Image (tube, rainbow, N blue to C red):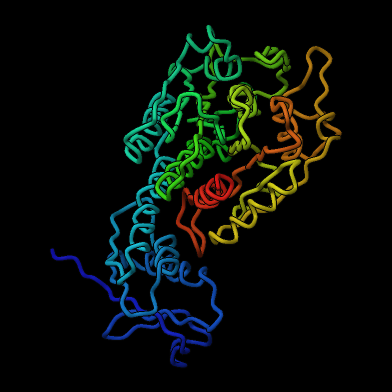
Length: 431
């Protein structure tokens, strides 16, 4: 059966009264019309794309001269869904716009797809390899990587990743990838990206209820986002050296899983008492941050689906950012505005670093019960593994990485929010 293609055009005139007051969409024999107000934001187009897809319209042609790169992309963001095939015949764009659109479709769709993948189909090793493959496909030369797995992690004293992942039948892994376009092995590392890649999070012995566990295939959203951000930055012309560290594990329950009261001893001399095995993301990120600091980069960005507290604070619409570096946060927010993505700053102060007391180790992996700023204390924990945490370090708590149900802008599943912003920030700081 030949697929039916629906023509979709934009109009800045109101729909006929029969479609209702302030109607966003009308239709005729010529196809669908999206009605925009003169100062309409891109979210109106994204909402229209979501609505058309939910009505079973899966093959469209974007017609007329009003479509540009950002409007086309906004439509695709809403139109795309994780189940079933969709296609778009794109409008006439400039060559530069076509290239940028192709980059976004290849890379950000990869991010959304890999986050949506069932945990059974994405082991720690597979996430590491598929992330490396994306970047090696993006740039053929001056890139190399290694994957450290299982017992080798313990031998090399990656205590956090190994401890969290040892309870699973699928061994934990660390991806270390070096993008060095200079070709000079002694070139300084400009930036380090450290991503949390928990390929499934049961909560361990602090086990999650089913209602909280059913989306935990997406607990590797930070790793996916940073991989995509680096790939997009490279596609846009990044010429500075960047290292990517993906800290990957299953957090499972078994006779070999880590337990409450255990103490992890890290290579930087810090010891951490485990009082909640569901606060595992910070434990694996600590290893990556230690490695990142050894490179003495100007910029360190870590990203993780780290806390429910961030989602409670900002919902699923904003990515949360925490940092001691006001100037760097301002640069991130400027990049987010330019890329039409939503970020929100949450508080992080020196006193948060003192809210993780332990009677048996340097730190507890959760804050004491009297301190309830969960996103802030999680970031504060990470700061203990960043040598110069006051300058050049950003922590992104990926509160907008995944939606458990569809809304008017997004299908159920991964969003890809943040990839463009981080890519833009890397390029801006690299100049």
